[in-house]
Length: 203
Image (cartoon, rainbow, N blue to C red; front, side, top):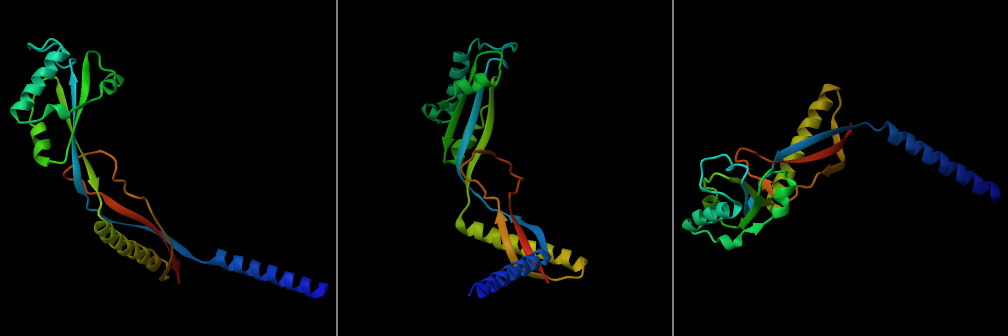
């Protein structure tokens, strides 16, 4: 009985070793595939930096931050902007190392029209930054994935053809998830790509 057990044990060890050697000899090709990813803007944010650094040496009647803020708000009220919706981040301003008084104001809206109005002000001492928060629908994500897979297959085929082999089945696939929760600067000529990494078996 002991001899039979030992024989079975060695047989299993031998089979495992053979399987491991086979896996080590398996040829693979790893490629990336990418495709344009369409996002939808769901919110707009205007970052307004009010700084006395910019007006200190200028020929202006603005003598302090309170006056600068008042003049800025008056211009916005003329554009029918509800200035009560601003959120102030005074400590963020001081952390940036400005020399003189100032503050940072944020205005968040779902209206593109309101966001564009906020960007129309042109006041010395007020620096504006246009930011957006975007969302990716499940349908757009699916379209991008299918296109990226097609692109990956094309890349793998080109590599395999160069060394006289053919592309086999997919062994593994991974991607870097595209985040939706971050505020981003808006670039009209920028296209985000959905990128995947694919490992194919080579036949």
